[in-house]
Image (cartoon, rainbow, N blue to C red; front, side, top):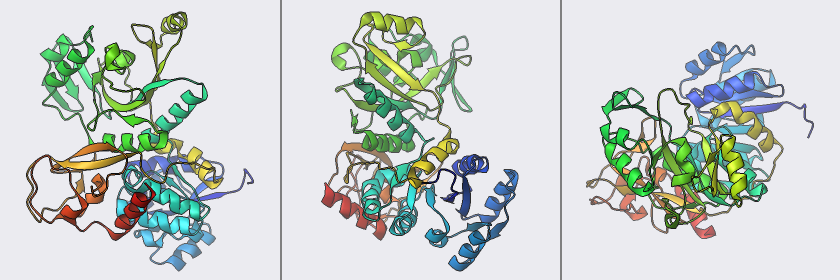
Amino acid sequence: MNEQSEVRVALTGAGGGFGRTVLLALSRHPTQRPSVLCDLDTGAVRTLLADLGYAAPVRICASAPEVRDAVAEGAIAIVADVDLVDPQSFDVLVEATGSVPVSARVTLAAVAAGRSVVMVSKETEATVGPALRHRARAHGAVIHAGAGDQPANLAALVRWSRDLGLEIVAAGKSSEYDLVLDLDAASVSLLDVTAPATGLVEQWQLGDDVRAAVTARQTATAGLKLRAAADYCEMTVAANLTGLRIDTPEMHYPILRTVELADALRLREDGGLLQQCGAIDVFTSLRRADEASFAGGEFVVVRVADREVADLLAAKGHVVSRTRDLLCIGLPFHLMGLEIPRTIAAAYARMPERLPDAPLVSMLARTTQALPSGHRFAVAGHHHEIAGTHPWLHTGDVAGAVPYYALDGARLRRDVAPGHLLQMDDVDGVAPVVLELLAEQHTAS
């Protein structure tokens, strides 16, 4: 491939926050440029391009021929319908709609035309990612998880660790928002919510009994919403990208200071939380206002085979366990679409990303309350939650169970009780394209 050749990029979900970061990155890239942008609010995308200083002409298009003409003439085509994202008008698709049926449809159209895809829609990746990759390989295309989001960044950190021959005890990321503790006022803040936190002040130091301290911190913050479906989705994707395991279906989700990661995310027999090595999890970052955030970043906890080396690293400020046997290596950031050009280049070059044709971990759904027949499920909110359910992670593919995000738009056929693991035969209305891809994944498993 000529390194200086121009790469035309299509972007779905262009009007969102991630889309803005992608378009900012492309506005400064020497060889990558947006050619087709899709969003329901086409006017907002036009305004966004102007805000970012794009000089290329912009056309809002209502048909595939209009898209082709606009791109051929050097304009950026904006469309409201993913069916107008014409594969002849782009080289790489960056898919960021977040809607599994829409994402699957536009991805299948792209790979059928031999176009590679950067998958940002983690909901799609967690639901039908293996089947989509299988389809892509059949057409000589590839699908890569987008750099800048936590799953791809964590997978890269895991690959780096393995390249060095390091044994990974745990890996994961911090949750999106920190718990910021005011020790003097005995209060804790989560975004714009502040609550009394005497119990959390008492547990500021982890102490020798790690499990007891983690439990006490969780009890002290029981009134705050710390778990998000988006985190479960990202860790499902990360597990399937890396082959790491889920230690418990709901993850441990400990509240930890960054300096405590190597003390807590270790085997239970060594005083930690984990039942097995190679576990993947999320921690809620606990810090003071004057301490740096982990910023939703990624980490690995690896074994150190020599105490003197551990002491050397600890003296340099690295996060080393008190027992000097584990080291935590972190990337305290994820820069969203600002990192996406790296993945676009890999997708354009068709760099292989060999992953299984069936999920290693599935994200399923348990009901949190009794739900009546006819209840309609819908993904809603910033964290893409489905009311009345909670994520339930399971190793491997589960025949009959419905993946969490496949529920979007489906309705219950019957009454269900709290704690019920939702099954395909419990619901009607799962999108046909999703059912088709899930059937392929189940066959592959």
